[in-house]
Image 1: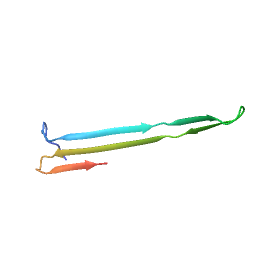
Image 2 (image 1 turned 180 degrees about the vertical axis):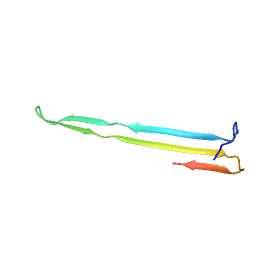
Image 3 (image 1 turned 135 degrees about the horizontal axis):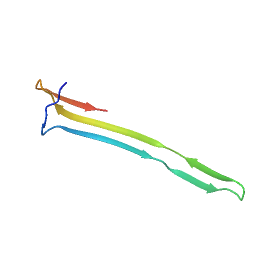
Amino acid sequence: MDALFNDPDFHTVDRQFFGNPKYNKALTDKTSLQLKGFSQGYAYSADEANENGGRVINCH
């Protein structure tokens, strides 16, 4: 599908996000507790006109 050039309604949203938490706790003089986590995400959406007169909306 060919998108229309310079369409004023065309827009995209492209996001990436992540988190990396860490927790440390000394339990005694010789032992400790360490917790780590990781989370990642991605979001994409687009609204675009094409040459045959329709609109395409993509969401991921």
